[in-house]
Length: 73
Image 1 (cartoon, rainbow, N blue to C red):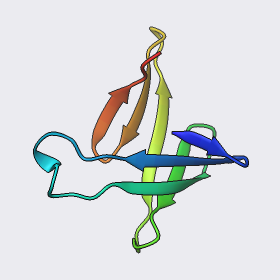
Image 2: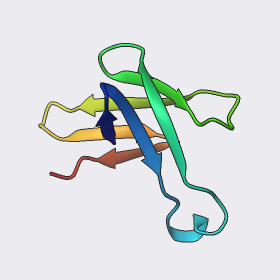
Image 3: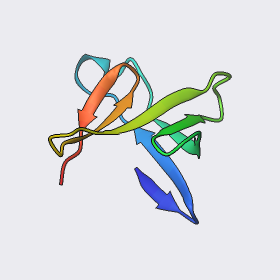
Image 4: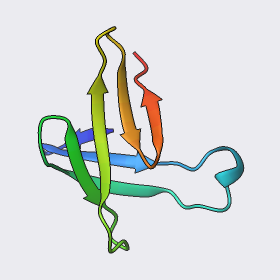
């Protein structure tokens, strides 16, 4: 995740068995509410949802493409 000129972007990189099968993508994110964003790459017709979650125990996650990725500090 990066911020450039006030816009939030998400770059995905395939890992594991997806290397060579899927392509990297960059999504420019548009806010829906305080924790939910939508974005799509230039070649995509459908929007993808990206959700940030802060749990009661203090852990933070990014939910995207069927996965919950913990925040690394």
